[in-house]
Amino acid sequence: MEDKTNFDKINEYYQENFDSVFARTEKALSGNRENNYKILGWESRDAQYKRFSILAKNINLNNKKLLDVGSGLGDLYHFLTQGLHWSVDYVGTDILPNMVKMAEAQAEQIKLPAGVNAVYRFINTDIFDANSEKLKNDKFDVVYTSGIFNLNLGNNRTFLKSSFEKFAVIADEYFVCSLLSDTSSNKEDAYYYYNSEIVEKSMIDVKKMYPYSEYTIIDGYLPNDMTVIWKKSPDSGTQIL
Image (cartoon, one colour):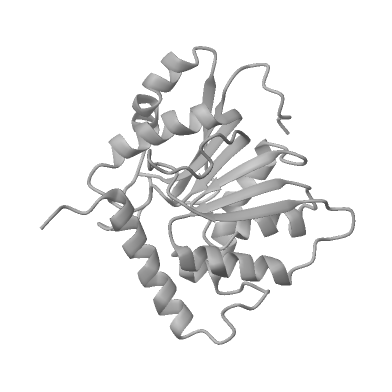
């Protein structure tokens, strides 16, 4: 029996969540999206939004092109457009076709606030697949991801390092990711927890690729979480808030 790939492990976890919650949720396609966080495996909607808030508090995404890797049901898009009234050019990718279909169905139901000129695309693809033609030539101002590094895959440090290198290439200005922190007092074997040393080692080749790049780690907003914000160069055009 062949070992499961990262794709297989992540796909299996979220597909089980999707099937479990969808099967017992009436009006699962409802525009209010109240059960989305359960499908995505987050502890609460509030915790999910706190992660999004760290991104929004540190980088102004209004009129920027954003790639959301592992976008799930597109909650970040709605957070930015409905909550902050930002006109973002949003592209969400997910490896689960069902997630993409449901994200599109929800987005179609929700009208943008007056004056918001945001656009969205949800794409079923694995951006780490070298053979994928989707988004092959696309560039983005900011790349964001939250949750894809949470599962204990058996090779998390290697996956994090290669992902950082991928993000650095396709992000013109920033990449941002949330990670589970090893300061958590309620660790579970199914998940992987990170610290600043792991992040630093994962940045070694990124720093060689972009010597003037810099990163910061933000914590304290949740007891089990931290966010890495990488900036490509000191004169990057995106506004720091």
